[in-house]
Picture (cartoon, rainbow, N blue to C red):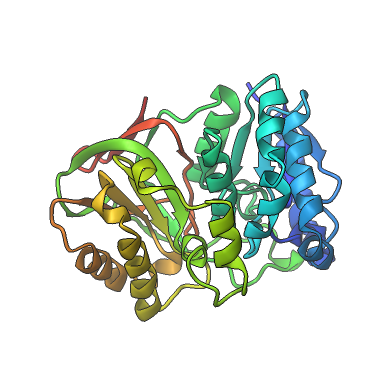
Length: 345
């Protein structure tokens, strides 16, 4: 049972801005209604500019949350685009490793999007994490309650410390275009959801799941966004080795940037060049936001992998399309497209 949650801004400092104050207040109240005590880490609410310019302080917040014996769960505020900048402050002098070793209990770590970088950082040290939801994107939902499918998994995680199985959501929601205070209480537009879609390969496959936001993983090999991403990520060996990927299930989902098919192909081809598709047991793909380019993405992933023996299942309710489930990393999983379930050991 989770009792105390540490709220961290490891990427963007959005929750410190006035324009989201109404959302933050909703989210904090909801966490309290779950019976949770919330610890807002010292720099989490400093705002976008401060957080952007102080990666060391972001790293310190993570280290402090890991070492705080009251904290049961570390909840990421939101994603962003420069989480890789925490690497020197977590690995140069083994700061993250020592914090994990000193902690008397293992914390639950939950986040998605650019938090993919943090998941990979913690994975390097054998720290299992949970992918799929964040404070601002999910707990702060402006409907009268969290979206039911999303809430189901969040409640399961805080009550049991784990996720047993995932089934598809009956519906999916269009992303909001109005985030103002006047939109509080308004419902999202929803559509019927089709369930998990087997694109190729065996319908049942197993392995530990790892991956996340495709754009974040692509940034490890590309300097288009920031000039030092490749050098920093190489220096600290952020991307797992092929031996580490062997037998795992690769999770891929796309961000709110909604990459066009040409860019999506380029990013997937980059993972192919690295050799990931030669060693994984299968691939699961999140539904893209608003289903934009969904048909194109499905054709591209099959075309680029170019191996019909690799199982690929799409339309998982994870990542940037709502609602969102939560996927444990580092736990044996079985994907069953026939029975529309992902089960965890």
